[in-house]
Length: 258
Image (cartoon, rainbow, N blue to C red):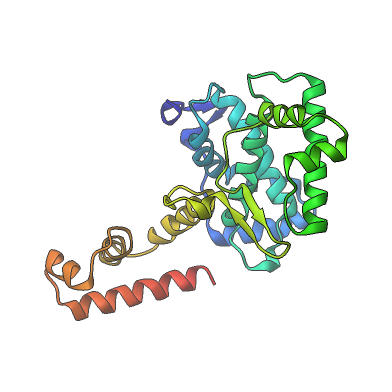
């Protein structure tokens, strides 16, 4: 399993450094000034983030080394585009970029090969669909796309099917020109979206900054869905104490991510 792979691409994952928030900020200032050594230190200090992300994609037939390299490309792109003045945690900004890079790699290296002509038709159809949607505020039908391209309807349908990847929860299914509806908005399971997963990573990091009692209360209240009374009974303190500790914990987390 990937968790047991100590060395990836010649990197000993057991010895990867972990940077503090202050260290990241100081390094990033140097990076913007052109300091190459600071850039490399910053990259090394964020490789654990890449490792945690690529584990989600392991088991699809791709080697851990390949996924790690692609994830590092996403990390570097995030570093090049990150703006420290936006007051956003780097990990929060970087996670979607790394995920996107890995997804593009998996899509482009799909083992199912599609002929060039079919792929080209599909991309032309996609361009027509996007242009039509922008101009009319709704998606065109297959018939309208086929008419625009002057090809049989069946060929358009086949081309779409041929390049179809597994549906992403971020896939837009409707757009009225001002607001989009995504697949994730139409399914009941909201626990496994990329966005929520990224948020959970940030929350998990914040929890590590709390003391043990605060951490336990936050987990029971917001992850296990317990009431303050239930938590109080479980750990043997009053509800008022639970309320106070919970409030302190939330204020602490807010201070960390201001």
